Image (tube, rainbow, N blue to C red):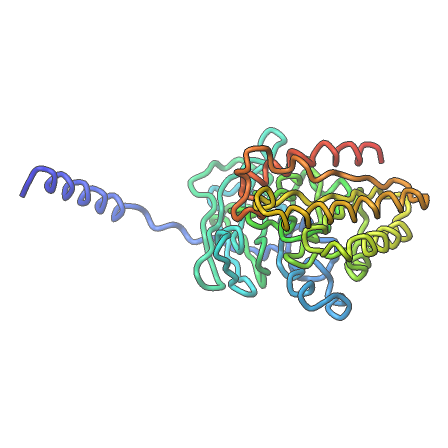
Length: 363
């Protein structure tokens, strides 16, 4: 037996002894996450759905199904635990070939450090619809405020947060993320969070942490289409700002009419709230394929036409954001030419952040 093989065997033996000597994790005391405040959910039903149950009969079936995904919803709590875990059951055990399982149906834990939200760990889901993971172990007994982001592309049937025996978990002491009116963001799969690798990296959730303000995520994958039925839900919210980013999913022939109708509906129910219309950005193949490029430009032209018409009709506090520059200039910000990577999500958030701050401040 040569020296390399002997060295490898010695290394494997050492590792096996280390793992064999690792202590078995102590059992955790679990608490129903519904005991704690939820961020990014505007209704009071005992679930993790984005729309209340009555909308099942008013929105299209695809929108209703997607509204049961927990995108943008997060749990706020406080604990002095040295070990924190999570048990959760998802509705669909969904999977996609261009998005990680953690982004689709996992969890992300953040802690408040120096008044900023700092990433702690992800709860990576199992292959089944039930998962159990440790998010923090061998930590300090310091009291901390926490934020737990829920799955982007699956629903949550049940969720419990576990802490080590003897530790406490309770409602947050600080009012961060509950002391400001939310932004309502109505959009497409990109707004829902596709294709962030984990929930905290969806650009809407990045903006939640940067603005210290909740965002009600009404991004519906493939189905953000300026619909008045969704407008009814927006009218039930109490927002600081309404963002309409539905160009990606809407054919050019429908954008003008639907955008005008939706803005008029929202202005009637929310006469003082700023509304921001957002153009679609250029898909990567649009730089090479003429037909894709022309559709992007047609969609932008139709939204601009609606915006100009609404202004001419006297609609106040209506704003517009061009689709240029959202994902940077190096063409490396997407998974598939359309949906942002984590890099693209960070760039999207950085690009839109100054506009959001300006409109909220002006209000």
